Image (tube, rainbow, N blue to C red; front, side, top):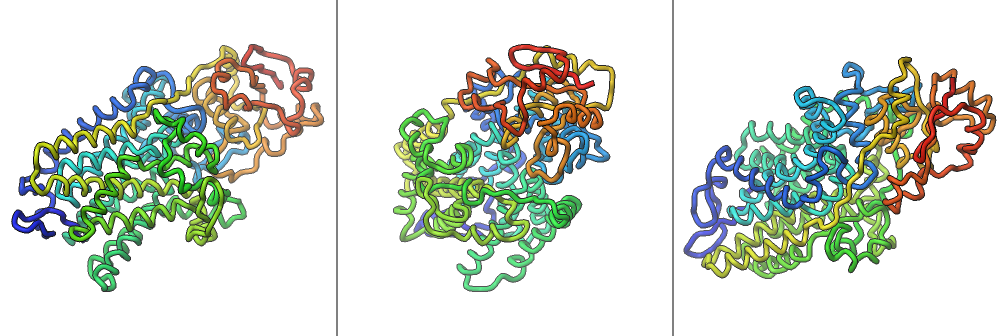
Length: 593
């Protein structure tokens, strides 16, 4: 399928070019991929440095993003590089000790964590090195995603300037920025545009190498985030249906071979993991969680400035009414982008509309998917959406955060912006037009620029040395309070394990809770019975975390963490039952035996 927007000088009509990747809209020859790629990557790397200047001083000492799932992401890095038994990677008792838990449903961004594990063999696996590698791996997704989008947009529009701007739009979109500070797997969008490019090239050139490359990038995307296993499949379905409707013909030849080959290829490549996941799902373990009608893209969130925006205070009231959390609610498309897209609709409404129609249809389809089970308007559920059907299908309902489908909306938006630039430059290529595009490009950068970026300090209390330096092996730790739900506290406990003591913990969380362990049946009313229960489970230390830890109080929304609940018992009972091995303002360590 071709969406060529290169024009003839005589009539400006759409033409089909046999060398689509080698000519510019004005007839200029493109440099080959290998010549241009490194230069484009270097350019986007500089843009990445500029966009995230606030994070530069702390790359080797703190985690980027506010405290949350980024702590679990660091545990994933530590586990792969240091803690895992690589011959039994998908089961561990480092968390959920002593029984342990399966990790097939855990949120590993596999390409990232294994790349870090390899690099750690060279630069070291100490705490600061792992933090640095973790942060750099997250930031690397920006120039990589931008390069892939650049080639995709340039191929579809025939314009280098538009491709450069389109690469920025996709790579530095607000959702990507937010998830970079909190969800390493969701932020791993770098392989998606490469897949789309290879897939379209395979259809156009009927080339098995392009098709094989598409399957490889599909596999890498799915291994980065399971959501992308589904979203890319939806893209394949959308593309096939769109072409069939446009051509008024059922798919045949490569239009049929390519989607079938990609879907078969991904299932075969991932079958060792997929089979294990299905076995867990049918074994009676609950692998599904709610959220398909909560973590969605609200229609009012598309023009609402994201939390890091300079003008965020103007739309703060909107975010306070949205469902989900600020990370999943961030789907800001950019006011400048919306204006440019509106101009494109006006400019191409009578001619040169083929690519525009593809862009608008793609954006609409994935906005619908991002809406979840029902259309949300300022947090209120209104009309049912097609996502409700997917939410009832086995395996498909694992996609519990529909707003993440916004990644493809941004990809289509990038193509549309690139198309607009190509059209603007096409008639006369005047200096005034070039300057106008430069000004608009600067405004786009400023509109996506993150003015407020949070970090998560990583520090260890001196008390952890008692546990870390204990010569005994094979014992575990109970962190209290457990939290309800255990997500936030569990993230902290996993970070402390990875950074401070490296001992198995009874708590900790995975993306899907697929194991019942000691932490679920902990006795909290009869303390003597609890002591025996913990001793039998080889829990040697209890760590009581204080909610008034000064290091956390500066994050106002963390003030409610580490609060005791009736199900945990009373802290005074623990102090009376177990001898104190260490006490400070942030934690108390009790010894069970």
